[in-house]
Image (cartoon, rainbow over all chains, first blue to last red; front, side, top):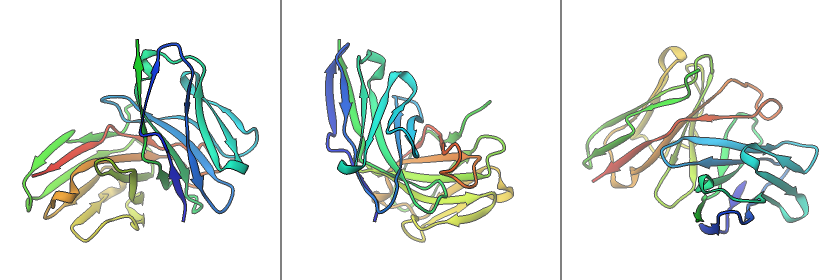
Length: 114
Length: 118
């Protein structure tokens, strides 16, 4: 069965520092991978997605993620974090049924120190 | 363009009572999904509508949950009778695509309805 693991429940970084959020997936075929963010009082917003092609994917708000098949990972990165990036981040994999069903990780809460 | 709208934003009820959550998808989106996040756990799929038809309801926890989408527009999710373990945040999402991962592959989520069962 497909599953997604986000090993870090909570991460704190200083403003301006770099960020990497980890995501590992278990999947039997070519995965469809997503990162969503939920800011306080907001819905889930799609940051970026990987379907195929270039394994380094650029997203909104200066985020990028790299798909590494050998490590079953899809880590999210940002070179310089802003205070407004404080939010909860979710990694997800799309089910192979091709219907829009997503399997989510547990989420990582990012706190940004001034 | 309005996004996905959910109502109420927060509901507090006692065990055994009934609650109905509503979701208004983005206009023109045939696909509508319900997801749930129980405290401290991952967001889990509940079910998927295509227009008014239930495409996949494999995630519905038990028969205390009833989802409807009459007319293929807004959807309701009723919990009757509510139990303590039903507490959590219920998310609704919608999308336009029918063959999903080959197209834009984006679900648009609402802010969620927080349900607290006492």
